[in-house]
Image (cartoon, rainbow, N blue to C red; front, side, top):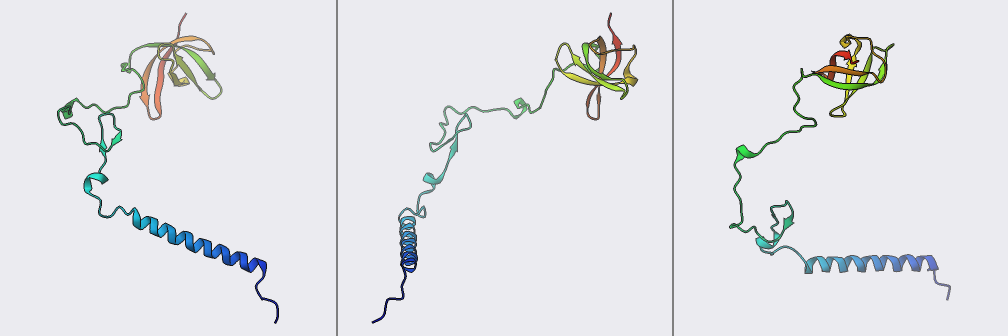
Length: 150
């Protein structure tokens, strides 16, 4: 008789295929055993508690609070409600005279506000204390009527 045509690598590949097939069959049986079909609706529901966390227990109706829809306020506010035309004080944090614009750091809110040379009343330099008014421009706040403080 001749030698077997099966080599070592062929035997290893066959073993790997058999193992993969058995693992697949085992997974299939596990899925059938733990199938969620037939569970009651109560076990599949999730509730949200007063803190926004998911829970499996239904809310206590005696502890429930009613909220008037008019009491809900939705807004985004990054700064205090300051009238646009109120005078503010600040320091020139950067100024490029050749480009014609710069920035003022507001002393009260520490906010950086853009200004253009057309909004200057007095000649200014870097680190000068100034007073100014604020207006809303396309890209945000803009300082106008910038006066040097003495």
